[in-house]
Image 1 (cartoon, helix red, strand yellow):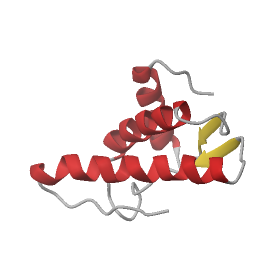
Image 2 (image 1 turned 90 degrees about the vertical axis):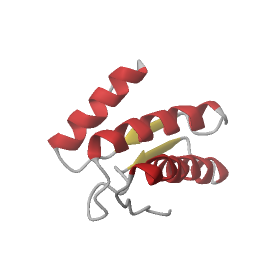
Image 3 (image 1 turned 60 degrees about the horizontal axis):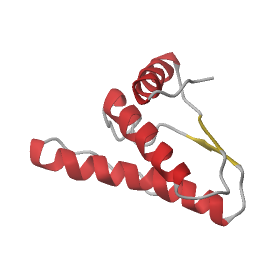
Length: 102
């Protein structure tokens, strides 16, 4: 899985969001190709790479939700998060999407 490193700049913001989203789509596609019904995903690029956590959470939940709708194999995707700050950011993103977190 590729982990994009975000550089500052307004012009690059959209391309970095798309690159991050593509990481999540690729993970769902790979899990489906291997016959996995469940997948656990991290908060990609929010650690050492410094991608803003709130933005990353929004990108992640939207990308995963969209990817899950494109295939029949993966039925459950869970975010495996490092700390309570990440959990809170992903909870907000899931609630904004209309999905509950468990």
